[in-house]
Length: 134
View 1 (cartoon, helix red, strand yellow):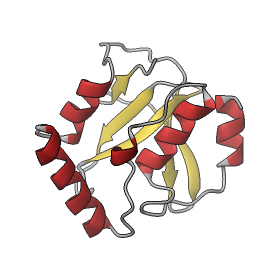
View 2: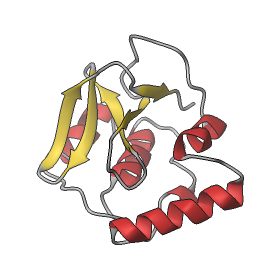
View 3: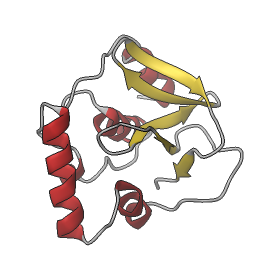
View 4: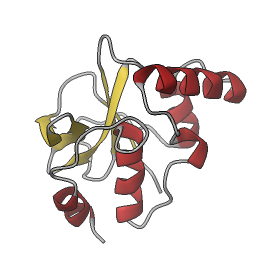
């Protein structure tokens, strides 16, 4: 499978905690590129925002990380770039979000992520973070 095929297959996939959330989406995108998925413990079995928050707080304590961003930094290289490549993991600060960040992947020069209505590909913006998975 290619990243483009993965995106096409998920174009109508709606966000659902623990099944189709931002980190399960990223994990699947990595696999579609022939890369290792996110570590299994990062893709939880929660079904609610509150469950996700509890899951990630416990995981951060267990791994000694202070945030989901520091945890991602421990797993992947975060280059300073204004022009991220397609397939890179992306994060955007989102006020009021459970983790404070939304995750997706760079696709066709945009920030592709799952939303309540399905897959969206938003323009990149200043402050977005990117990681290279190899």
